[in-house]
Image (cartoon, rainbow, N blue to C red; front, side):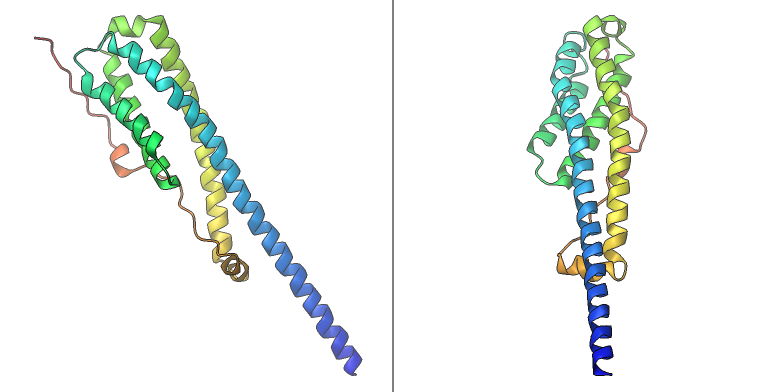
Length: 189
């Protein structure tokens, strides 16, 4: 009888250890998927980041009266350059997106600029990067969502607590970046 109890307890212990290992490995996989998703976004953001000075340079030749719009793009780019945490990177990229929306809206009043070959190429390049960035953001948010659910569910929360895993933030657009772009035109004197 004691032997049966021993083997039963041993079997249950082994099953619990295996179950714990499965949970642990699943959480590790999710953690690395989030890092990979973030890295994929980062590559595209870097490409967009590198195109911004060229775009501003081309626009400066035509838009002497729209200094504030160009400065907003430059300011947003420098925010990204000095960002340290994921939250700061998210906020800086939201600012870049908003500044680019404003810039492209103002460009409509500069037919010579719209016709400029270099501007059209840079605008197309920056615009082409926006779709993959949006796709990667969606994938990142899905990874974060799955991770956050797992670390809050029982019994995963026990293993997650032992691993000191913390809830991650979704990439969300700031409310101010959801508003329509307000365009004000300067009239040369």
